[in-house]
Image (cartoon, rainbow, N blue to C red):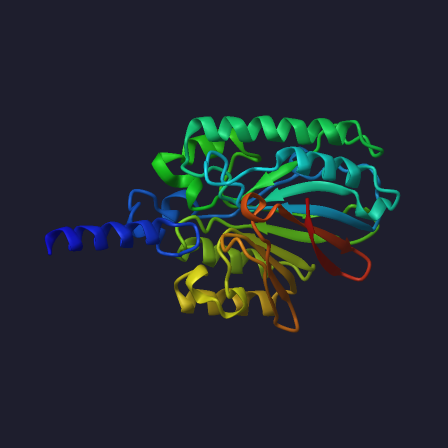
Length: 301
């Protein structure tokens, strides 16, 4: 009986700490989003994307759930590099990614070696961008934190080895300076919640601008109704959706679930990108700054 109880307890802990389930904080209580991300830092100047084509229609790339260091995944990095090089030299300039956003779970267990391997991956990506048709010399790879990135006190490694070395941030970006562009909000949901302070700051900052907006987070808000993979506080989810509906959020992009989920709220659209590690998938987002619209396109490599 005692052996059975221990096996059951071990199974529950493994389940809750899995990437595909929300309450990771029960096993890792030392990490607290209220300590990491009380405010959303607004980035400017050299922190902004440095694409060179100046088109009002452009693309960026979503990568998520790489789980570097996980032995049970056969990471197809070479396949991605070949695909990415092809896209960076695409005859259609609107489809060449001008920057990448990584939606978290970069590392599988928050180890230093995993983040070092990610840095090597990032350098290869930047090298491809430098040698592409657009010749982007300072190609940006933005990141948001996932639950696995925080395992084993990995928070400092995340800050040191990912860009822009901060958990929660936002920026205004117009690829074509004659348009109003979009606002991008990168949120810290690494504990399966945004926390009170970050949520309040999100609302406060969004209310100050009527520009179209994009929200980026590791944990989904709704994921097409698959609630076991979403933020766990339903009131918090409702608040995020209300903030989005009232402040011209066009698109919410998320990871964590490893599978493809979508939901159309009419005013805005939510999409969960499949995992880089388990699905060999990324998401090409094409933005039309003139119309204020975004189109998503899941790609496999």
